[in-house]
Image (cartoon, rainbow, N blue to C red; front, side):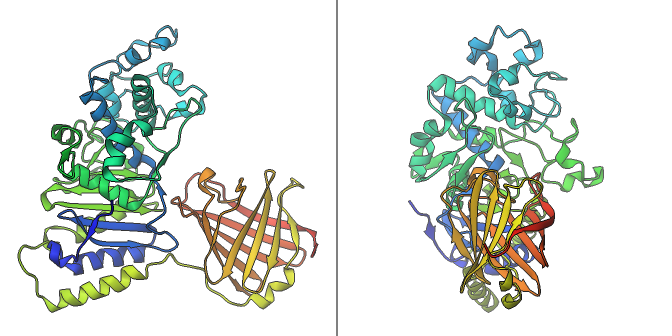
Length: 495
């Protein structure tokens, strides 16, 4: 099921407001897609190429909000109790001697509100083959329910509890209850070694699926005249249950001074896996690097975004500064400037694209075609450069895998290697789809790689220096991922 499309003016939104918002996002960089929905119809949408509507995107912690809805279904079916101790659903772990009394008192509602008492969190449990045992054997430093602490490990335990009481994985539990009614298809959800969906991260859906989820929330659990879950749960889940800055040192707020906290969208309170926002009547689900599902109940509006940003606060401020009360109207809008803005918006959204490297001096680097360069001290790891009439190929031999990156000359080429393996800038097992383009200037070749199922991209700068190759790899956004800078020595010339 696809959503209906209508013009912003017909939905009571000034096109100039959306246009300014998209312009600012485009100027700041990092957005991958957006959709604005009002009165149950899409008012505007856009994808920055090579991202596209038919591709899924990693949601990171936006997954948590979907997990919250699974709790609503499980509670409605009398499978979970908000006030039940989490350990009560896992009797096989009861006899572990390391479980302390405060961990035994952690309840389902504490998992939902990120108030388990862990400091800083229980995310370390993902380093263990059995994360459930690791959670129960962990230590807390305060009573559950008294302090907020962002905790993906807590959301994982919700997923584990649902799988325990239903006998099926979280994704399979939600399919007939949420995903199929909303027409959300081709989804995946990462899982741990035990075969439990991660819950707090790992969900992969399309931008329109985020928008549908937002409409479901806006309609308080109703879809196509069917009340899928009680409306009261949506109200309860999205209200403030705990302070998330006055009672704890929350790492994401360290960069904000105390007087700036009221302007932070990470300091307005937390619900059941939902954040409250700076506009008092707005709430959201969000995920690392800018994955957003923003709900504006009073304005009957939903905003869905995917991105690869380091500063999510900037992304949100662009929304608040543009889609505020002044952007909406009742009645008829025949302002000529808005008609012009509508046309300009259509042109802008139809041509959105991530920036590409510039330079077409390929003659200077073609003489290195066929050279193989040793990568680091491991003689089995290497980089080979090939230039053809319409493209270049960099073949990475690393960690036992050979991965060709085919890039067009100043144009993008889609890649889907059979054995993607691991190479610089690789965001794990989602690297099976990427797009690459290259540009040349003097003895320097720049290759831009975009992993189109993820927030990630990488820029490879290769400078040829006689028998050596200076390679610099910058991964974006700047997460704890593998960057590289250094010289490679020629291993074989034109082999």
